[in-house]
Length: 363
Image 1: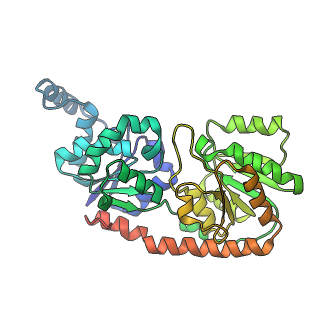
Image 2: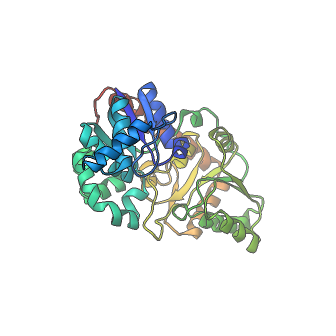
Image 3: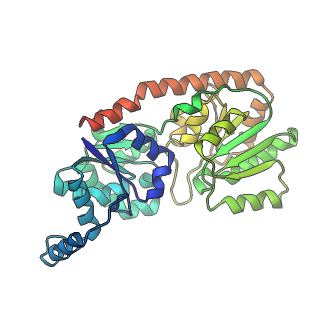
């Protein structure tokens, strides 16, 4: 059965979780992109006959939206039997075409689409229709599952499936040495990179030889660079975005992974950050916050250390507790690697996506 993965832009195909889904769906998968109602495919150029047919049908009142019409054409001509929409608004955009053709629709929510205030203002009513039609709605955290139920999604349609790490991150060996910290993620409000920097600045008081590497890009990167310059915070390296292969190597050479996720002022929040799960499967001790899906995968003081959101003193203390205790780092490393491996095994992503290809939907 052909499955169409629907994304807003072709650039999203390179995002970790989207790429993972496409790979797991295998040769039976096609990718359609191009906005809130995807209508483009690599190698596809709408013919003049297609455009003229649309205009004629629009005049006759049979078709209204060109993107919707073109998406339906792509789905039909590629014999698609199931659409896998990445993010709630894309699911809404695909709803008409899927209903028209009787195509199954699975929607994967990731974070902002379930929580961001302006997104909910625009889509909450439309989500009700989406939840009624969709075969399955995928949630990446228990908190998101509850939110989706409150938005009107039937509980029996919700499938909990956090974004899990690539196996490559688990192939190395944690060195358990040095005083290097690593943060990986976009420089956006919900990841609060400035709070990570401020916590690290407190760590430097007792550990002036500690270092922090920050990987990623985003609108808050210049702000964070300026913060380090103005407060003269040393030993912080901004590396920009890096491919997976380089992130793997960085993790294997770091002492502690840090991420200070928070609820943003616009309501945006994480799902289950894939970078945290990658660090765990790599056996890197994680210091993070009690936020959304992070709570689902980390047991405090057993498989990582969690502090309250916005608590930079608590994060600094947690980091210092690991820097001075090699045995604690070793214990968290072993426990986190084991816990993530067990979670991956229990969720069995590959079987889940194969079932989609086979036309079966595992709840």
